[in-house]
Picture 1 (cartoon, rainbow, N blue to C red):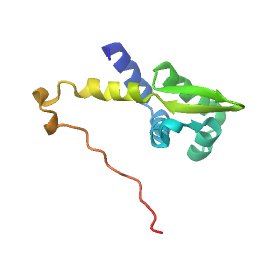
Picture 2 (cartoon, rainbow, N blue to C red; picture 1 turned 60 degrees about the horizontal axis):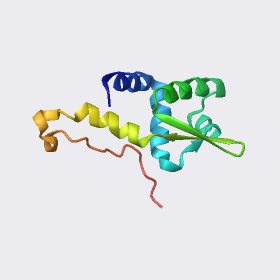
Picture 3 (cartoon, one colour; picture 1 turned 90 degrees about the vertical axis):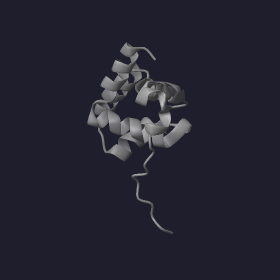
Picture 4 (cartoon, rainbow, N blue to C red; picture 1 turned 180 degrees about the horizontal axis):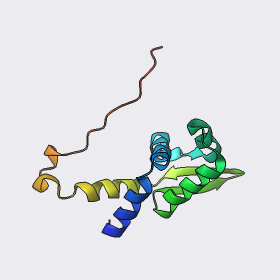
Length: 112
């Protein structure tokens, strides 16, 4: 990833609502999520959601695919991994074991 692409991606994510949308879509995985479902989950008005999604699209972080009448939003995981790779490529002088990202589950699971 080039520096200008990284700056664009980080800039798009540097907003509370866009970061929330992005994290929700990352959680949804490759199947993505409809615009209506995103709006419902985040309790966000459609016009506001549309604005933030356009910023994420412009940065290349999210793609949209029409399925019938629905618009499915999906994270571009290759782009996400490229950004993480760009941020960590020279980490700790090449000793990736010292600074590899740690995935932390912040969601509380309900017991059955």
